[in-house]
Image (cartoon, rainbow, N blue to C red; front, side, top):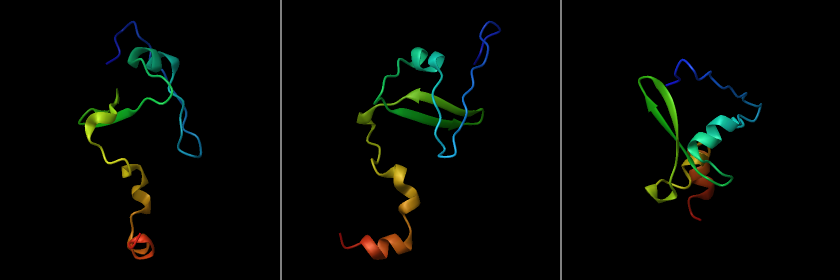
Length: 78
C-alpha cells in the first residue's frame, strides 16, 4: 500500500489494452524488458508482481480468446 509520503502513480490503457509501467513501478520491482509479470487477484484488488518463467504456467494461457469450439474444429488435428 502507498504510505502518506508516496503519491500514487498512474498509467493509461491504450485501445490495444496495453499500458506502460511507470518508472517508479519498474524500479521498485526491478523490471527489465523481457521480464514476466504476475497478476494476483485478491479481495483488495489486483497486485502486480515480478513473475518467474519457472512457475509452470501454461505458455499459451494468454491466447485463451482463441479457445473455442470453432478453433478446436479447425485446428484440433494439428
